[in-house]
Image (cartoon, rainbow over all chains, first blue to last red):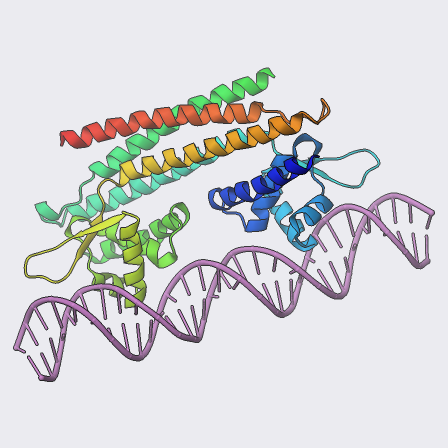
Length: 165
Length: 165
DNA sequence: CTATTAGTTCGGAATTATCCGAACCAATCG
DNA sequence: CGATTGGTTCGGATAATTCCGAACTAATAG
């Protein structure tokens, strides 16, 4: 790989790394491992690659790599007569991301409903002017439902596209 | 407030607290303050309320309360002849949440485009079978665009509704 | 002026997260 | 068999986060 491409790759590993630290709250090295694997692509990344390129210890790489596999973010392929594992991103990452969002929204909806129940109860003993206003929750739940619906459509489109390939 | 309602409130403060810790990555006490304010409603929560009910020090409450105001998550009203502040949630929280999502998605889109540029460059020097596949990014960007659009519609609906009131 | 209330600021203690090294295991090579 | 490769596990060092207490300010009350 060319000198300048290598540099770009390193820069992008750090930038993407910070992004994943926040989005998936991974530890710094964990996030960089994921980034490195994404930016290496089909040919795959080995354990030793990660240790030397990310300047991290074997134990750290081992732990995070296993964690990323547990999270279903990466997987690996093997070559006959080769003991190494070649790590690549799980190719349904996109669908996974959508499912994660849907789950988060579902969880939020449940929470809002639980809070509404509490507020309805509490309102029974409150004066008119201090009563809880439930419109907020109703609106938010409506928003979550619509958002879920529209993302569900996207998910189906993507699944359809994937099965066609 | 009734005994059992109080208990429910305490339970919900903890539950909601954990939710906000993750969603908005607030510190434990910060997340509980936000939850407590939400579950107290219109009448508002005072500094002293928070200190005694959440069993936290004045300094901790002060810091987190200011932080929540900086984040535009809470605001306060005052009463004539009363030096206390009565904290309540910022009522455009819903629109804010939507804007946050839209910003996150825009940021993700920029990242995907930057990665695509890198991969296109890298592909020039790669064999056919190890070339990066760009479909993933194209698909994801398409997904982000559609998601952004559909959420933008919801935002407009909500803003419209709010101005009507 | 003194006391009280409402809150802020700052130094550091306690907790938690992250990472490393050393020792280890299991498979293959010679 | 011993040596090398490809990793895992565990104890502890380091760094970052979170919280607290003490000392402080600023406004009002008596």
